[in-house]
Length: 469
Ligand code: TRP
Image (cartoon, rainbow, N blue to C red; front, side, top):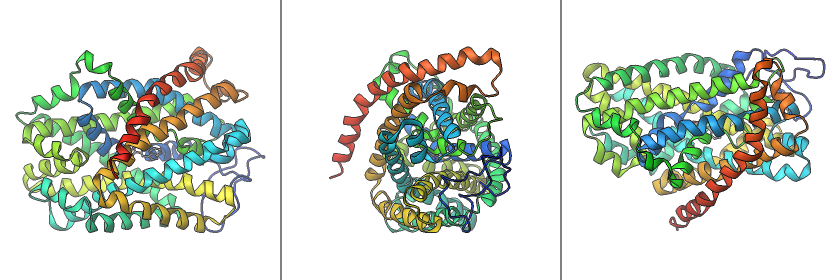
C-alpha cells in the first residue's frame, strides 16, 4: 500500500491513513484508494501466496491422505473460498472501513465482537506464522552463506525449535513490525513484484526437474489419484476447508481490509477469481515439487517423523541432489519463500494494527509495535514446541477462520442492504444470474456446510489444545 493513490471521488479524499508515520488519524474518517488495479491485485495475491502454499499445503496434503485432500481443496477454494472472498469484498468496499468499523456499519453494534474475533485470529496466526517464516529466513541465509545442509532431516530438527527458532522468529517479527510501522509497503510491493515471479518460475522449474527423477511415480499417484471413498470423509473435508481459508487469507478480515481501499471501477468477481486461481496454482505446483521428490529420494520416513517440516526436509534433499547449481537454486528459492511469507505476515499484522488504530485511536507506531511485540511474545511458545505450533495452526485454520467466515456469510447474506448491487458493479449483464446463485450459496449452502465442519473441528481442535497440557 502506498501513497500514490488517486481519490476515487470527492467523498473519498486521499489520506493514507495506513501509509506512514505522519498520517496517524483513525482510518475510519478518511480513505485512501489504490492507485491502480494492479496495486490491489498484487497486495491481495501477496497476502494469499505465502507459507500456506509452500509449507502448509504440502504438509496438510501429506497428513490428509494425498489426492483426496487435493481434490477437496480445489472444490473448497471455488465453492466456499470465492463466495466468502466476495462477501469480504462486498463489506469492505461498501463500508470503506477496516474490519471492526466495517462490521459495525454493515451489521450494527452487535457485530463488533466478530471484529474482535478477526483480531484474535490474526494475532494467533501471525504468532506461529512468524516461527515458520523464521525457519525460511534461516534456510535462505544459510544457503547463501554456507550451502545446503547435508542431512536435511537432522538439520530441521536442530533449528525448528528452541533458541535457533526463537532467534529467527524474533528477527522476522522485527522486520514485519518495522514495515507495518513505517509503512514502506511500497518497497515491499516492489520486492514482491520481483520475487513472486521468481518464486513462480522456480517452483515450475523444480516441478519439471522432479518429473525427471526416477522413482517419482509413487509420489504422483499419492498426490494425484484420489480414491473416491476418501473424499466423503469429514476430517478430510474439514482440513481441506481450513486450508482453503488459510491459503486465501479469508475469515479474518484481511481481504475485507484490502477491498476497503478498492475503487468501484473494479469487478469484484473477476478480482476474486484471479486471486484464487493464482493462489491455487502456486500451491498445486508446490505439491508437484514435493511429492515426487519424497518418492524419488526416499524421504518418506523423514517426512512422517515431522510432517510439519515436509517442505524444509524435502527441498534441501532436492537441492543437494542437484549438485553444484543446487546452492544457487536453494538460495533463490528460500529467499523467494521469505519474501512470500513477509508479504503475508504484513497483511496479518496490518489487520490487527488497523483495528487497534481505529478502535482505540492510538498512533500507528504505537499500535504496530504494541501488537507486534505481544504477538512476538506469544510466538515464543510455538518456537519452543512443535506440537504447540501444530495445535495453534489447527485451531486457527479449522476453527477461527471458518467461524469468521460463517458469520460473514450470514452478515452479507441476510443483513447487508444490497450485497448483490455492490458485487454487481462493472460485472457484465450476462454474469448476473451467477450473482443470484452466489447470494444463495452464501445464505444457505455456506452456513450449513460450515456448521457441519465446525461440529467436527471444534472438539478436534479442543482436543489438540488439551493434549498440550
Ligand atoms: N494466506 C497466507 C498464506 O497462505 C497467510 C495469511 C495471510 C492469512 N493473511 C492471512 C491466513 C489472513 C489467514 C488469514 O501463507
